[in-house]
Amino acid sequence: MNLPTFLGGVHPPECKELSEGKAIENLMPSSGEFIYPLSQHIGAPCSPLVKKGDRVLVGQKIADSEAFVSAPIFSGVSGTVKEIALKMTVAGNFDTCIVITNDGMYEKAEPLEKSDPVKMIRSAGIVGLGGACFPTHVKLSPPKDKPIDFIIVNAAECEPFLTCDDNLMRACPDEIIKGLEKVLEIFPNAKGVIGIESNKPEAIKIMTEHAKNSPKISVQPLKVKYPQGAEKMLIKAITGREVPLVPALPADVGCIVLNTATTYQIYLALEKNLPLTEKIVTVSGDAVASPKNLRVPLGISVKELIDACGGFVNDPVKLIAGGPMMGLAMRSVDVPVVKGTSGILALSKKLAYLSEESSCIRCGKCVEACPMHLEPTFLDHAVRLRDYETFEAHGGMNCIECGSCAFACPASRHLVQSYKNGKAAVNEARKNKAKAEAKK
Image (tube, rainbow, N blue to C red; front, side, top):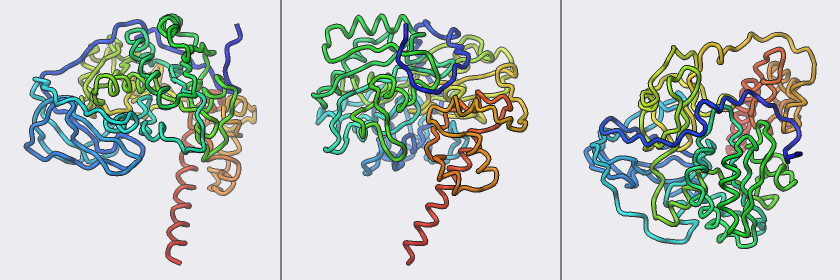
């Protein structure tokens, strides 16, 4: 059976058997410090709404911003604000954080007030929960001259190891369908499509069954290929439409893409008046004793998740927040789970082994693998020469940093890191140019 997909991409080992099909377990610690960074989304960071010594409740808004591209932050526990201070995040940097001492009582704040759906989604603090963390209300507010034809639920979950979306679909199909229906009420001329890779047959079966009474919603099985879950690749596979290059967005081709967990959270906000206070996280890897999917309060320490999975069976040489292809390497487990945390991976030397680079042999495998149809080896060469103008001129800023090129490279070239360096240099040059023009 020829399933829809996109041109390019790779097929890394899936490693999903470690946690797939296991019921989601709730982890609700009775004590401990919960840490809430004020930057948990793309856009303006939040400002604290609480101070040291304040008592807070589950679902109480503790930080917000007046900026449109932003999203408020809510406490996942009840307790007392210990401090507002710089703390390390999963990315390894330091951010201003609200630290709350959990009293173990989990007393709840009043539900959200009903309002316009898009405003309520913003009020609930919902962002892209697959890791991008783009505020969802912004996605749902396209320009009036951009008619929306498709609302696509990204249930591909193409990253190896991760199974949180798969297990959420098995456990809460009605809620996801209802969340999508709520979005379709905002865009009455659109169709809803749930795109699921074919390596999740149980989820496909369950979601198809539960969508049969929703005439505007369909389930589309997809070919198993990474990065099928990237927005542009998913839109191409499902609709045949191609999103133009940067700075174009899915709305430019009549599409809005929402993560599975985001759609579920929209249901909770619009049907139950609940803000975003919890996250389902896959904890996996060959260094973890008992891989699981855990539903946890935001702000919980990653160490508590590891401990709930039996700890390490051997010393991991790499800790990753997210999936192995696009996730962030972690310096410590003493960091908090945030809105964008979809997975915590602990890998042994066997799985995390990184070969030394050798010279490019011009085999072209990176070109074949690139889903953005770039020339990775050429861009890498430009960056190493610090020729950032050439890097930009040949589409380097369109790289989605998926890692397909590096995975396919027989010379083990560190291509993604090279592009990150190139993009950072171009952005810095743009900022400096803007500053110089502003002074004129």
